[in-house]
Length: 114
Length: 116
Image (cartoon, each protein chain N blue to C red):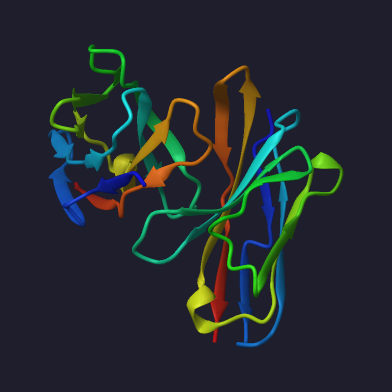
């Protein structure tokens, strides 16, 4: 089974600064998707950004970008110009190309300091 | 577009009691998932439905958990009897399959269950 590891249980960042959340994964598949989800106290999992493994270009969504290193099986999330509303749990997730379920990491709790 | 609806939002029960959770997926989404998220962990898939048929229930503790999806729309997840370790958030999600691709995967806000 695929495994996803997030080694940072907690992170903090000053408002307007940049923070990077780490994620590594293990798979024998060559075609898959990687995701970062945000889970605020409302509990809903909100999609932040998605990366297709066959694409070499790193995905970007406004202030959010990823550093996808396929050979190293690494998928980090960079949040630029951090805002108070970015404070939440962030989960890294894996899904195979034809798969049904997500495999989630254990999450990183991000605190944004005013 | 309405999201995935779940109820109740919170539930507290005593161990050995039974409980049921309800999910209404996004209209037109044929695939529905139930996840269990224990505190401090990421969500873990319990069961997946395609229309009203079960696709994957390999991680569902079938001695106490059951789920159904009548008419391929709403779904209920039941626990009977509940144990302390069942305390968790139960998330429902739905998606649309087209060909071999999975689109529009959307999560609900979950039900937080506390077993005392």
